[in-house]
Length: 166
Image (tube, rainbow, N blue to C red; front, side, top):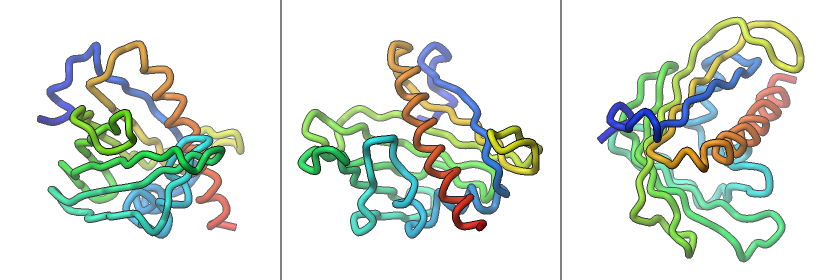
């Protein structure tokens, strides 16, 4: 299965704009030295030493996320790459964590499309990258929570790319 088979009502789609070239934004998804510095919503961090990243179709991405307020709370995100189109698209099948934080039996599909274009960010208008995110299947009742989680994750990516550009 892939994202293209997810029913429309169970598919979350949104855009995010980043004031950085598509090469840097796309690269941050596939570079473990960068990934651990930005991946995860507010209140969570990704442990660098636990990252497994095999950036080819069928390859694995495995991340351990630790709660910043209680390090005894953690979860493992485990995905397989379904598509990689350099500088354009990444698609994964991700096993959602179970109640113990381990990869469980529920799978969601995630596709990230990267578009170089003029973007509007809090810093103004300029050249950058628009990311279109598609995630599903998931109930509509969790769409806003998932979108907010990704927005806070992308805020970390924004900050990292600004820091690296300075």
